Amino acid sequence: MKWVKTELDVRYVECDPMNVVHHSHYLVWFEIGRIALAREAGIDFSKLSEEMYLPVIDFRCQLKDSARYGQTVVVETALERPTKALLEFKYRVLRKQGRQLLATGETRHAMTTSAGQLIVRIPEEVQQKIDDFLGGIV
Image (cartoon, rainbow, N blue to C red):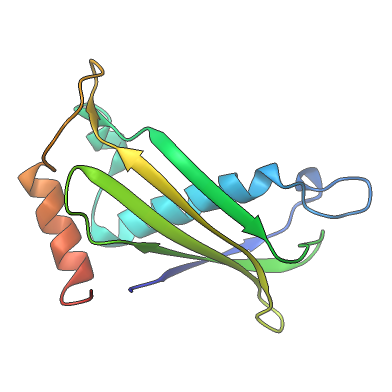
C-alpha cells in the first residue's frame, strides 16, 4: 500500500479536561488524511463535488492509546485499489515522537451523482488518477 503522511499538532480544542483528544476528532483527522491523499493523487474534491459526491457509508476506528494536547501526530492514509465505484481508505494515527500507534481505522465511500443516484463505475478521469497514484501497488 502507498501511504500518505500528514502531520498534525494536537490542538487544545480537540481535548477533554484531561488534555486527552476526544475520540470524535480521529474521524476529522481521517478526513484530513483523505484530502491529503486525494491532493497527492491529483484529485480535486472541490471540483469533483460539482459532479458527484463521496458520502461515507461505513467507518471504523480502533483506539490503541491516547493523543494529548501539545503532541504531534502523524496520520497515514492509504487507498485500496477500487474494483467498483466504492473507495476504501485505511488509516493509522501515530504519535510522531516514538511512532507509537494511537489508532487504526477505515472509511468506505460510495459514489453518487449530485442528485443522489448511485454511480456504478468510477469516472475514467478519476480512475486514471487513482491508477497513476497507485501504480503497480497491490
